[in-house]
Image (tube, rainbow over all chains, first blue to last red; front, side, top):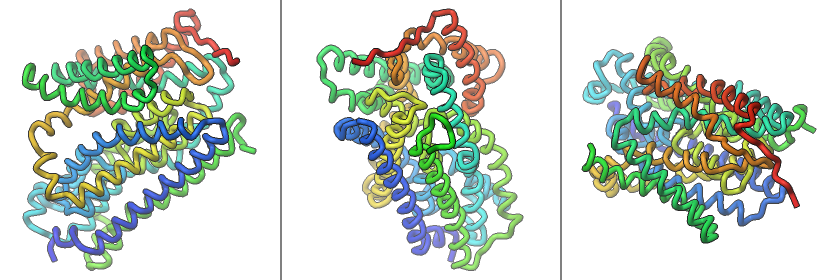
Length: 240
Length: 240
């Protein structure tokens, strides 16, 4: 058997499905606990359903870009492992770089050269290297996640007004970095796309406030994402 | 009772469950390649794996850790599912901010933690379902999702996403039991610092995680100074 035959083998499909089934059940379990807790804190089912609807609608579009990644990754790493990697931790950019570096580590010039050679002996080193290389976030979360979260929570709770402002600072710090990084640093098309999406969100918020159409807020992020991404095609033709 | 004052039993238990769940997820990530290699008798040597993984660890561990430190205060106890399922910046953080926005809950509170968990769990499950559908419909979907126009649109997904998110942050004044006036002021100094650093010292492309780590203390300091000067005002919301 060659590299791609093993990477598309039945045992790998079965193990991947079990692994993904486990992660899915973990999400269901965590959600069920959170749901019950929200109800006990006085939230209504309809408020919680709004989160479910809004998160579902919003997630579909970015998830399609993961599927696009699946197409490119599956040609070099087979379908099941690409499916697992892109559902658990990974991103297309990381997986391709990781697989390429693992192939170089195995003595090939590139991932393409490895696939062409169809060398089955490097299956383990490629798969393990990819898993170990990306595991830093998960392991870090395991050791310091609880401490970071509880410390900030306690500090915020014991510092009243400043505590409330402090918690908002993490989101604002994120925007300070990603606002220029995803607009002016990327060029005019990205800037125009960002502004279009921002305008779309502003109009949604205005309409929700002005006309009291609360259900529209469930679609704000998804609509803005679609309008922004569609406008990128126009901006690319005009400015690109 | 929780051993952390001000932190509920729900949050404490969520962390413990998340940690156990993470250990099992890591076992799957490393176990699948090992079992596959055992089945086909192609077990790699320790050296082969280390050579492949070393470069990746050097590249990705610092970024992953900076993301854990920066994002965990926002994600709360849902950080475990977030880091296991990945796509933190483009899927999970927006869903957390959206869930908080829809419910009016505040980051760093018991309720905020639970609603964030629902948003993250739903988003993770939807992505897994969409990717699974992508696997099933691999052949018929490929020509549609790899169309040049779709590729252009997905290349600008992050600008479209941040355009929407930033408007939500700037316009949103409510933070749990408090109203924050002039909150975006705290973003100005780190924003200027990032722009100057990018153009005068070194481009931040690919190093956004480190930039975020530097921006958090700067945003906190700016917010604290502006809060003390009275430029940013935080007032408790009167409850009837």
